Length: 204
Ligand code: 5GP
Image (tube, rainbow, N blue to C red):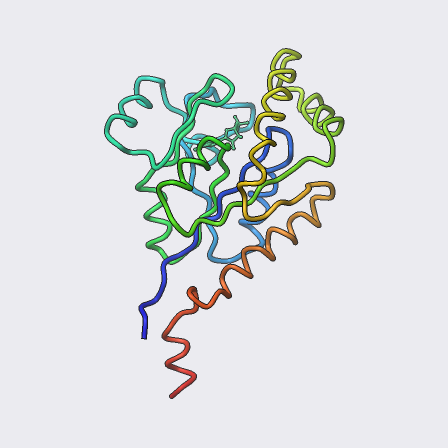
C-alpha cells in the first residue's frame, strides 16, 4: 500500500480588489487543517496590519539577501514592492499535517507551477471592472494613481485566468467562500490524498 500523502498547496490569485485576501482569511476560519503561509514583503504596513500576522515586513536589503540565500519558493515585484513565500514556512505547515493556502500574484503562481507539482490553482475574478474600480476606490488607502495602476495591472493579470484549475467570480462573499471550501474538500477526497491508515482500519 502506498504511503500517506503530503498536504496540498492551494494557490489563490486575483487582481487587487477582487476580494482574495478577505476570502483567504475567511476560509482559514471555516476549514480545518488549513493554514496560510505569511509572506515577506518590502511594502510598508497599512493601518491595522500586524507584523508576522498579515505579512513579515522587511527592508529591501533583507529581502534581497533572502533571495540570494534561496529562502523563497517564489517571489515577485508587485505594485513596486517585493513579495515572497518562505520555503521554510511553507514546509513547516505541510509537515504539521495541514494544507496550505498561498495568496499570491500571477507571477508567483507561475513559479510555483514550474517548481512544485500537485498544486491546486484557483483564480478569483471580480464580477466586473466597474465593481473592481469601486472596491479599489472604497478602500481609501489607495491614491487615485495607485487605483489606476492596479486597474491596468488587473487586465494583465486576468489574462492568466485560463492557466488556473478553478475560477470563482467573487460577487457575493458568502457564496465564494462556499465555492472555495468545495474545491478544498474535493481535493482532499482525491484518491491519492486518502490516508492509507484509514483504508487499513476499514479492512481490519
Ligand atoms: P497587497 O499589498 O495588496 O497586500 O498585495 C498585493 C499583491 O501581492 C496581491 O496580489 C497579493 O496576492 C500579492 N502577494 C502577497 N504575498 C505574496 C507573495 O508572497 N508572493 C507573491 N508573488 N505575491 C504576493
